[in-house]
Amino acid sequence: MALTKLLIGQILVLFAIVGAGIWFATEWCASEPDFQAQVCASRFILPRLPFHRPRQLFAWWFWYDAYAPPIFNRAGAIAVSSGLAGCIVQIVGSLRPADWLMSAGSE
Image (cartoon, rainbow, N blue to C red; front, top):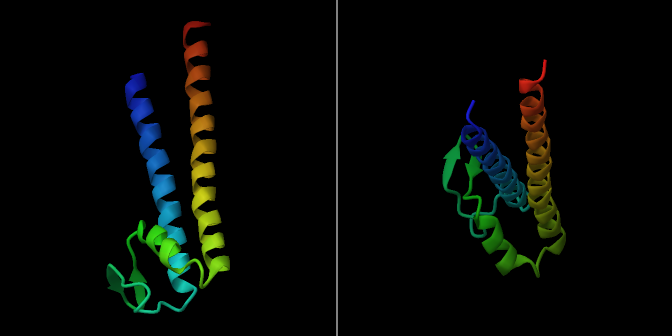
């Protein structure tokens, strides 16, 4: 396996973890005030479950943080924890190829 394919795969995994974490934080933040339509217009709606743009969290945080700081503090903690989880996955992923390269030439 070429190392460039491995690095591209790791980067894609990192983006997927961070993107999913930010999207989860956005959906969690939107669900706290019971999906108020005037606060958070949804991107599309599945049966009784609206979905929002992941980046919308940051706009809501800017505009409504003064009204509900605990909600946005927890949503920010969720988003940051996804970044930390991505870093941990990257560190673990970077250890595996080094071991594989060391053992490939020795018998």
